[in-house]
Length: 357
Image (cartoon, rainbow, N blue to C red; front, side, top):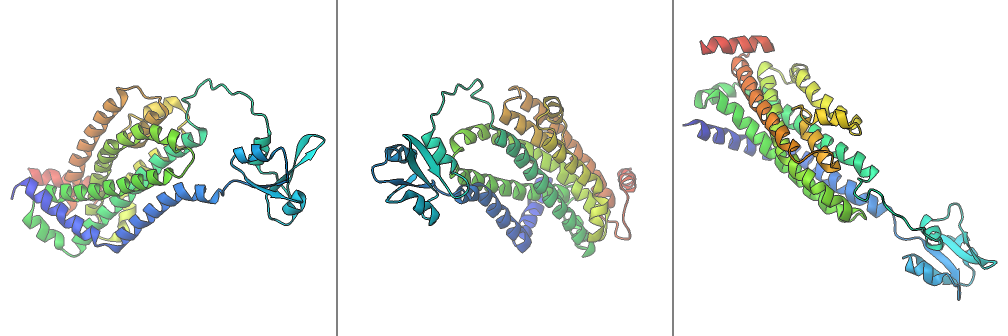
């Protein structure tokens, strides 16, 4: 059995086990519902147009209908509002419109009766401030939770195989590096599939919003670049998480042993969130391997990145991912068969050196 066949065998086994895992299926369903709900529910709960009562023959009826409001022609508009049958009423006071409401006048009613000034946009391509905050948060959140969740699951899978001595059978059948690469490949496939489903559901839900026509064209290029950045970033972190699982013998120890990896996942998450409006900081973060998967797509979204920058950043990330695979494989080989106690990072590194002599 060559290396490619061994990797394929291990990856297929990991995929079958994970796809039967109820926890994985439930978490995926939860993320999909959350993504759809976060894009659809605000539009659903925002309600329809305000209802406004006017008297028979009111000169404002046509203007209110043209604004898309629910106009009710009644005998006593004020009483209709008091009875709760309309959000507001428009009456004529000295040839001027007056809005009657119980507490606050609906903005759409006031806007329909107001004279809108001519507006000239000096920067029509500027990103909406709300989107400028939510998009960096979305990219960072997806990469943070997906890489952390699947990374910990990879580490736990390695520990479970050590506890049941299954690893000894696996190592006898396939090379150790094939076992590592197969686990990383399976985790990457599942993570990418989950992210793709979330993106599809989010885009579908966004069709219900009023800003779909302006927001989705901006998101397209950023989301397209996010995929290769996500894949390479995940490979880089998953290799380290597999090494973490090989270092310990109990599931309870995964958290402590994986603290360095958790830090290099958490720090970029918070840096991108809090520094997304700092051009210099974001430029630097878009070239740092652990933050590039989120920082560079954000810069592509807001238009601050030159056309050549994502290519350079992706090459740097690819080199970092390859280096992480080599480091992870060395630590993995040096600690996988140790079942007596927790292995330190340095001990696993030295043990691999002795094995190779």
